[in-house]
Length: 73
Image 1 (cartoon, rainbow, N blue to C red):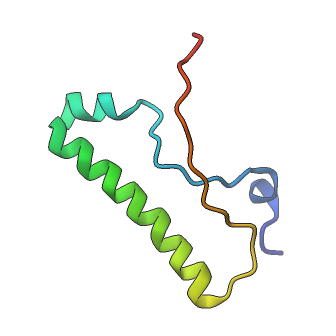
Image 2: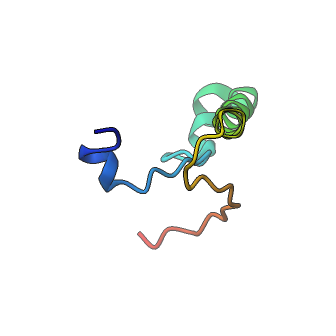
Image 3: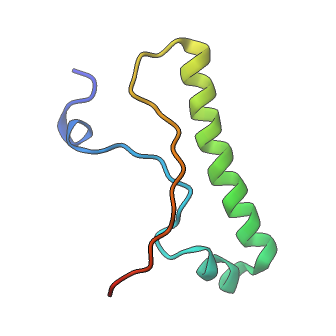
């Protein structure tokens, strides 16, 4: 069965937001590295969307804008 196990229990969302944030990528790899990380994440999501469309895959894929919310921690 495709989509069983943990796959059936996830939101399966795709996001170009990184857990540590782009500020950490920039600290480690500079502004150029941070920009490259952002572009590569966006390109990967765009590629997934294009494959879904090209192959006529029936799924609930929807592109949505996200807005970062400050942490309350």
